[in-house]
Length: 204
Image (tube, rainbow, N blue to C red):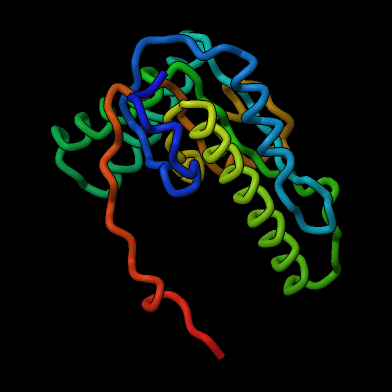
């Protein structure tokens, strides 16, 4: 599914955020392998607080896009933004969701994490769960790259976590953290510049 030479690169270094996909289905086995890689991520206390919802039918994608778009429009109208700009933003969001062959909703659950009486430790435990879920998401992105798929992590569910829970009738303790789009890229994504290592690390 990709141009010659892509697969010869390290999938960690080759991965780029892809937002436009070909209209080509993804074999279920590829999705299964990517999710298996996600579940191999490290996690706090090995509690594995990640949960995934695979969304692949057009009806399911459109239902989510419509509901999230309505919330986005409502939020931006409350901010007093220009109606034309709002409409463009909503359509761009919809195109990204409906245009991807597969969406993976990445959720967090605290049901197996430790519970503390004080707020400070409760907050730390929640942050540990967020970090664990993020590592699982990164594994999924890298695994997708290895399988020849493009991907993009969208943070939009953080602004309307109740929407996907309601749309897909999920358990109330599944807390949406992100939405990963998957598909075969139309073109190779642009390589964005990275800060030099000396700017982000120190030796002590």
